[in-house]
Length: 158
Image 1 (cartoon, one colour):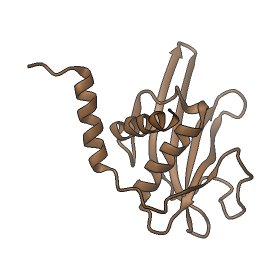
Image 2 (image 1 turned 180 degrees about the vertical axis):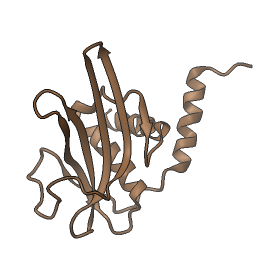
Image 3 (image 1 turned 90 degrees about the vertical axis):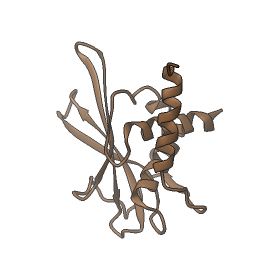
Image 4 (image 1 turned 60 degrees about the vertical axis):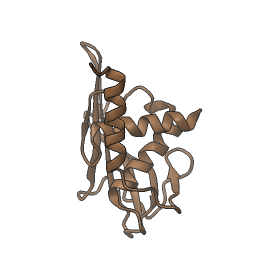
């Protein structure tokens, strides 16, 4: 009996789900980029101790491509996890630009749980990340876990 690509995708999603830490009952994303000013206790730039969550590379043509990087770090007070989005600005600055896009309280939340659930929250609420998550390479999250996060975000939008 042959397995279909859909069945393989379902198996990968189930395997990824087993590796995701449980969502803490009091988990709440308390900052989202663009909804409010960046809090003063956030770093001005990405800290050196930031951990890679995932990276995606997309190519639409010979001269049209995009690389997106997501990393997680703490704030200066070590009270919050911060999810950063980075992209290479090849139009004006010719350097990587990183911006904080989501944050949650750190107490009782592991870095993997924070990265995963902030990522789900961000994808569910932001239209600008709908089509960028192709050719994903893992970091804290594997490509199957990123796919699962995208599925969960899409399901929460409906």
